[in-house]
Amino acid sequence: MKKVVLIRHGESQWNLENRFTGWTDVDLTENGVQEAIKAGKLLKKEGFKFEKAYTSFLKRANKTLNTILDQMDLDWIPVEKSWRLNEKHYGMLQGLNKAETAEKYGDEQVLIWRRSYDVPPAPLDLSDSRSASQDPRYAGVPKAFVPQTEALKDTVERILPYWLEVIYPSLVNHDEIIVAAHGNSLRGIIKYLKGISDENIVSLNLPTAVPYVFEFDDDLNFVKDYFLGDPEEIKKLMDAVANQGKKK
Ligand SMILES: O=C(O)[C@H](O)COP(=O)(O)O
Image 1 (spheres, rainbow, N blue to C red):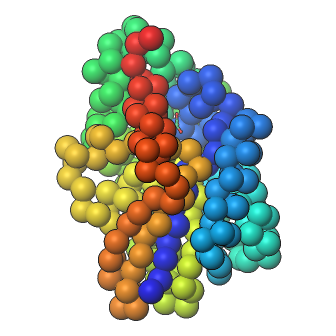
Image 2 (cartoon, rainbow, N blue to C red):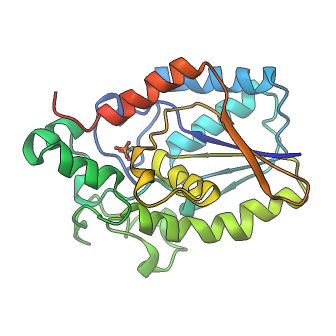
């Protein structure tokens, strides 16, 4: 049996402030660090022994991963970072408060921007200081691939080659791997793995720092998936994420 653990980063400063984040490089809050410590302890207690880790180019995911590995005394394992695991780019919404945006445009429109498969928010202008185009960390990425906004469909298109060509094949040589990334980039992987339809993906909300285990048989066929932790608590956390985009 092979296992991939997908984990969204712990609470970030902009999660706390309820702001659209996307590719903005926001740090974890102290609570976010504690969430990552809790996840690391739980994964250790459950006997996980990761051999390889993957994460994005964004510090909230990097720090969550490092904290988890530290709790598990697995700081030494190889970690590979890729821009392809970054959060869905939120375009012109980046930095705006989600509830205030719902006051202005309505809950339904915000749900479309947050969760629909193929409707992106308006793009950032290349000259906008929020654009990642001039950020040196993406210097090695073809300019045409650096997004100015994304729908989940676009996120899936950039993330899937990395899943199919890098992460998934690494299960041939590794029994357990961990992927520390973001709510929507992970929704993209989950949509693919579970064959979730474009309509049904709207209702999947990932809570911060809750380990989500995907098991594969020795031929690398997907077998089953489950969250680690108290199901009632996880349901409450998922509902809270869903409600972030509603008017107060
Ligand atoms: O980018 C963000 O704002 C969050 O990481 C995910 O936000 P969402 O739950 O509103 O998609």
